[in-house]
Image (tube, rainbow, N blue to C red; front, side):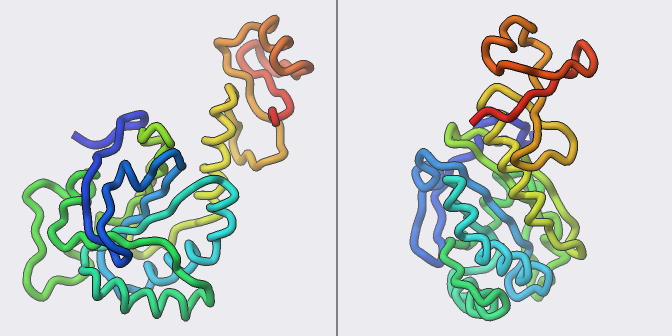
Length: 216
């Protein structure tokens, strides 16, 4: 059964290029984003992890830890990081999980239970290990998105989605294409009276669609 929104994500221990971690303990009280990759030293993934490295200040500003997982070993990860840092001109301070036995890939339902890595494998053998998981401090899955190997991930969208998730924790929702600073949506379950008390002025577009300034 695949992971669904609001499921508690699997806990596990694993080796990374920065040592062993216990996933839930590693998350702690932070938000977390798990980026998965089908193989080290692949072109699209290298550009993506370089983008992750370049955004280190943005993750920190949002109280968010980032971690990679790739179905190669620790030594490969250490070598790959040199290319990641060279391409992005930024230090890659995040850990990368070594998932050569596909434990994490299967726990997160990116590969079927019977999957294995054949001799002489190529990235195509683990092509579906191309997901992003945004996880809350409660260890619940808040959002996931999966990309094919040929399409690089849009990190502006990942940041926007993270901002939207953190904003929704303030009792509101966000409309299409929302970015921080724009108005937000008051949930239909909130009465007009309660909305007035909680948010002050708001705009009623339809009885079920009301907008207000984003809460601080």
